[in-house]
Length: 226
Image 1 (cartoon, rainbow, N blue to C red):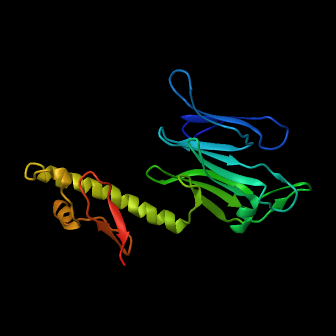
Image 2 (cartoon, rainbow, N blue to C red):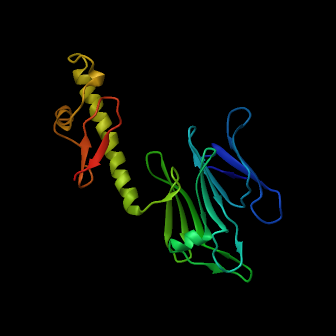
Image 3 (cartoon, one colour):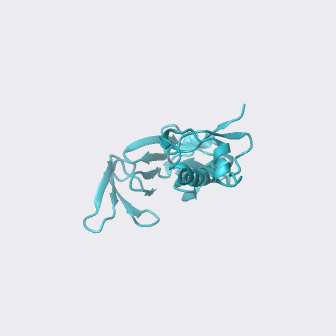
C-alpha cells in the first residue's frame, strides 16, 4: 500500500501471479468515515505513486526489474493515469531512447536509478521526476504524461505568476468600475485598462509574449508575438 504526500489518497495493489503486472489496484480517498473507493485498475505494480486533488487523482504505475539485459518495447517502464484514464505509458525501450542507460544484474535490468516522485513547482501543477543511471532527470507533466523540460516548467511558472497577478488586478478594476458600466461582465479588458487600475504596475511577462484582452471572468491568456 502507498499513500499520497499528505495522506488524503492511498492505493492498494494486489498481484495475481508470482511475477509480472497481472493483478488489481484500487485507489481510495481518506474520509472522516469509511474511505471512498475512487478508481480501480486491472493491473498490479510493485511500486505505485499517488497524489492529486479531489477533482484529479494521479497514479503512476512503475514497472518491475525486467528479465534480460536489453530494453524492449514489450517491457513496461512507467505509466501515467489521471483518475480512471490512462494518459501515457512507456516501455523500457522508449526510456532508453530518451537517453537513459541500463543497469543489469545477472538476470534482470532496470532503466531508472531513483524515483524522485511528485513535485509541485507552482500552484497545483504536479510534475513527476525519475532519475536515470546516466544521472539525468526525466520530468513528466502528470496532466498529459508527456516529458517536459526545465525550460518549459520555468516558462509555465512565469505564466502562472502573471496569471495570478492579472486576476487580482482585474478584480481591482471590477471594484472600481462596477457602478459605472452596464453589462460589466461582457466588457473586454485591455492591458491599458489594467495598468490604470494598478497604477501602472503590470506583471512582467516572458520575453516575446503578450496579454490577450479578455472579459472579467475569463482566465488570462497569453500569445507569442509574431
